[in-house]
Length: 61
Picture 1 (cartoon, rainbow, N blue to C red):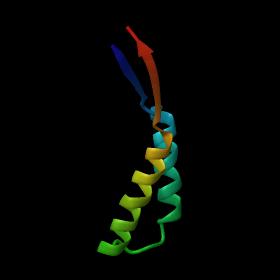
Picture 2 (picture 1 turned 90 degrees about the vertical axis):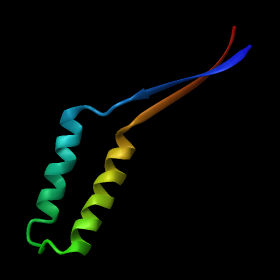
Picture 3 (picture 1 turned 120 degrees about the vertical axis):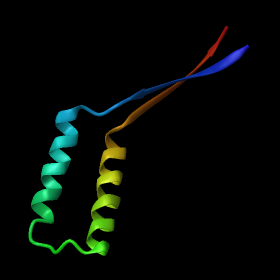
């Protein structure tokens, strides 16, 4: 029977911390309004999602 094997590699903590540091600098002067917070959450999720690697392989038993 054929199967798919999925490997998900999480990002390194240093890479995630680098994204947070970038965002802190970018949003340092802005007021914390609900709109700004939503924008920050959306951007952080998008950037961290780009760091996650997924490898899918097909194999037969």
